[in-house]
Each structure stands twice: as structure tokens, then as C-alpha cells.
Length: 154
Image (cartoon, rainbow, N blue to C red; front, side):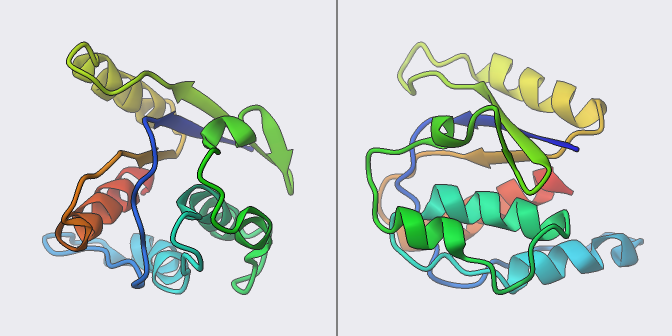
């Protein structure tokens, strides 16, 4: 089983609250029940452990670890010099992770290419996890970014 990490621009996102998903206007909520359960029962336990936290959610979603699995975050703690590259081409519990989109975020950032890469991965049946660098105020932007990431994975 493969899981694609489309990109990591950088991580400055702190998730202290449990994630929320928005299933309004969705006539088939049953398809999302397990996914919602994974997301809503997972916690980021360190301010800078968003990357391993995302990997842990994928492992939980794929049912290869149980809901109390936080080993990756415990090892990572508040490491600030890491990225999704730390998990690129790595197999964890039978799931292979790969990073497909890693460019600096500046005025030359190819937004259209990013969305095309996301679309291609989703069309091929792969799951997509995305992290974007946010600037303050994080308390306003964090839930939106988490929701964006969650909806892409479903």
C-alpha cells in the first residue's frame, strides 16, 4: 500500500485541538465515519511535531497501528529542522511514504503545478496529505488548514 505525501513547504502549524471535519452537504457520511474517528481521536502532542503527527494519522487510517500510537511524535518531540523528507521512500508498518512536491514558497512558487500534482494523485486513487506554512495568527488559520488537509485525504 502506498501513501503519497504531495509536499511540504515548511511546517509552522501547531495543532493542539482535535481536528474537526465538515461533512455538511455530504449525502454519504458513512464513508467518512472511520476517517473522522481517526482524525478526531488523534492529537499532536508537541508544538513542532506536525510532520510525524500527520504520518501517525495515516498509519491509524490504514489500520496498521492502534489509536494510542504516538511513537513517531515522541521520537521527534520539538525537532524544528525536520521535514517530510525524513519519511520520503520509507516504509512504516507496510505503508510506503513518498514526497512528490517540495519547492520553496516564494513568489515563483508554482501553485498551478501543486494543484495539478494533487489532482493527479487523487485521480490515481492515492491519499494526499498536505502541510503549508502558516503565519500568525495561527489560532485562526490552523483549523482551516487541518480541514483542507483532511478533506483531501478522503
